[in-house]
Length: 270
Length: 144
Image (cartoon, rainbow over all chains, first blue to last red; front, top):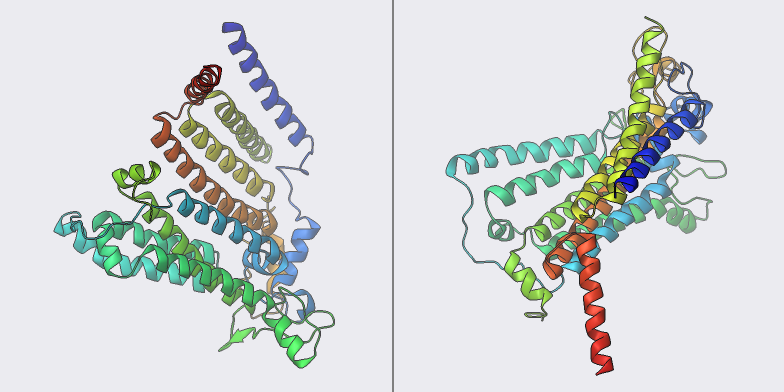
């Protein structure tokens, strides 16, 4: 046993040394003392918001959101789909467990409940604010949605599953919201293509502004403020989908242990 | 001073790699599924930090800025930003990686919970032993 431990320790040290040496030699480019931007990054920064070269631009001042939802939009769509699949599989694993309602509303003390009642709208507001500034400041749909889901967690802990269900936050509603968000993202992706087909103009999937050979574009300004065109819709639907999905997983994780066990034994499956 | 900053950055860089390797050890050598999941999250977090670090740059005069065009009303805004901004592409990729990592972690945690409910343990070695004894029982029944 002692020899095996030694071999494991030696191989770990060797791997760490080898990896750092390979990387510092330039395996992933000249790090960490570069002072120039890579050409690719320079292009992204110069073109993210460039009203002169609209055919290369996303017209969104925030570079990261422009890359996430415009330049590499298909990647992000599949990423959202992966998250959706994970949530579907979590729901499938707890198949047959009923979210039983009407077992009483316990929860924490009055002080905690009152504080939560004051805090929850503020948390939701912060989430909406992060979402609605996603193309102007750091942030976006996923971050905003995750913030909104925190409000659900707070309510679940300080009140109870019953209180959530009473206010309409149920498994089916959340699953429907999650699907609606994903469908909204898919529709935004093909919106210009459908318009182009209808009026006989060339258009592309995940098109935001005017591109080569296609004059169609999402509205880029709202009252003089840049909206990033389609980025506005992507961020909204993403926040919708993520907040519903994360809330659903939290509710699924807080099921009563006895019910999950009886469902595992095959009892109570309808 | 100009020598010190690259040296410290290299130390940070190497420490990320050491973190990665320790997390790999946790994934392979720890028998408990829960610890494997913790090690995997440490692994992905250090990899994400490393990716952000690759996008970092040292600005000769001033502080590196996030890739956000603040002064978008003036035509020189993007060009001004390009002098101080960091690389936005690693940040976008890390955003994607974080979401996928979160989804995978959720799924793994749920599967581990179910494994614990069915077998009463999360240790991979004990699970193997249970599986072996189950197989032997089945073989005995077949022989009888």
